Length: 260
Image 1 (tube, rainbow, N blue to C red):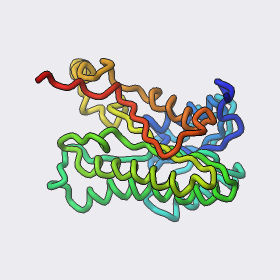
Image 2: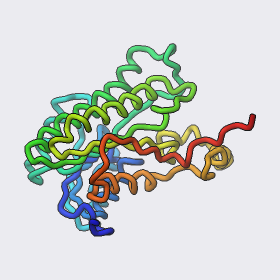
Image 3: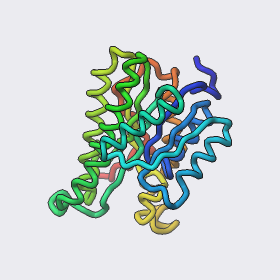
């Protein structure tokens, strides 16, 4: 079994959507586990992306912060080439970038919002997998982790295109795992439940509302970004070297069923 502390020693990882939330937590967990980390995000002006890069360096690891829009293939391919030029390889890709338009049913969803969600969540994830996998294939080694959602398995009202995009990521994961297994590249997904991030801060609008939502979960709490990052480190490490094509649901056991 790999060393429990530095299970990613010597690896080079790309984390998209790494400026905040789950992406930031995964980037820092990878660094703590010994990896060099490239953090990417479409937003750069607020300084948070560079701040995460500095946090990575505090673990004694090299880092790179890149502002890219993953829905554009040329930007994704430029990112991959820059990482290879800087660090020589790519061992791990964690696709955390994603958006949603809250409160929209599929009937209400207009073409513009559909395109925004699908282009980032699905097409962007595919572009990152595609570009990184080419380098991984050459080396006959690699590990891809896609962030799906339990809403891609069990939808809720008002989630619209987001649930569809996350369900598609689960199948994208399975298909890529099938295609890339012969190159010793593993592809898995994590499907979080409600994790306490900026994306859902309006939903859990007060401590009282948050407690009410948490009380409906099997384990009685909402998830923290660290709950997802710990799972990501497991999937990225050799501790999961016989796991591929899987979606691990991390959602406090789901919502407690209503009594009949």
